[in-house]
Image 1: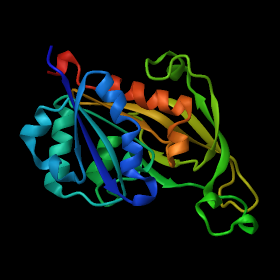
Image 2 (image 1 turned 180 degrees about the horizontal axis):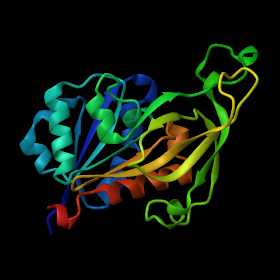
Image 3 (image 1 turned 180 degrees about the vertical axis):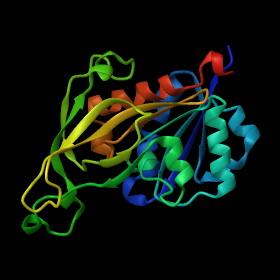
Image 4 (image 1 turned 90 degrees about the vertical axis):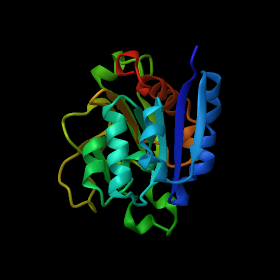
Length: 236
């Protein structure tokens, strides 16, 4: 039986610990029969032959930049059936200058609201808020999230700008506070899938730090998402 091929592309902003974060999931892929290749830049996206032979791309590349050639290669691979997945800023806050990337993924990080201004001390914890990841009706039935109850986190809560071509498996709601400029609660997608050509995309927004990635529900969603996104027989 031919082994499935996974490509891990990591780098960008070091605050999201791209090496350590992806290292949490590479053993899972290997245990499940994937041959894993790791790249430290997006240059591989311009290699059409390599991507055509790749069943799954796991990206952890916060911010950073992508060339037009690399972006075209990534999009073409997904359209042809290569799965694409990742978590937090490694997929939802990548390549801010590329509208083509936003079009591919279907949602983009806008902000993560912080604690009350008088309580901020200048560290990353200023942006850690208690919040709930709430499963949608679709999420309660979907293979990625079935059997996972709503769960609570204290970490960055992503506010996401998105389109309606995504299939939302879980949401999170931003309340309104006296210091906020918005006037009613805002619900953002927290976990979603997207069908793009013959390819499948999965985005999981929790995952700022290693402890969040090791949360049982977050880790389960990411691992199931990698399997679900992988190229299907019909896309081969």
